[in-house]
Length: 74
Image (spheres, rainbow, N blue to C red):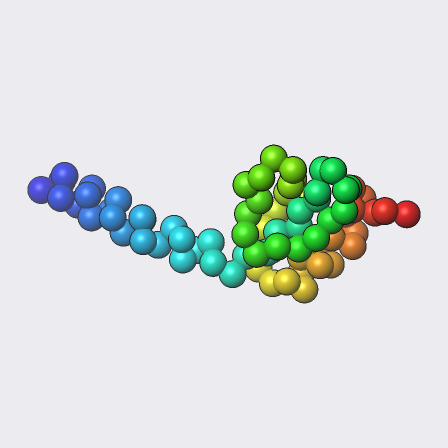
């Protein structure tokens, strides 16, 4: 009986995890061009590095990009 509950929990977690990740925005920095941008998917390429944490809205991600020292191109 406990195995059945454990399996149900694993299946439920498998369906819920992608839903929790939806609607997140990431500030990423291209390691070759040294430019930052906001993307909707977590970077997986070696040439893109995530700056900070995920943000709930694009506006918050853009604001974070403006204040991030690594994204300052001046």
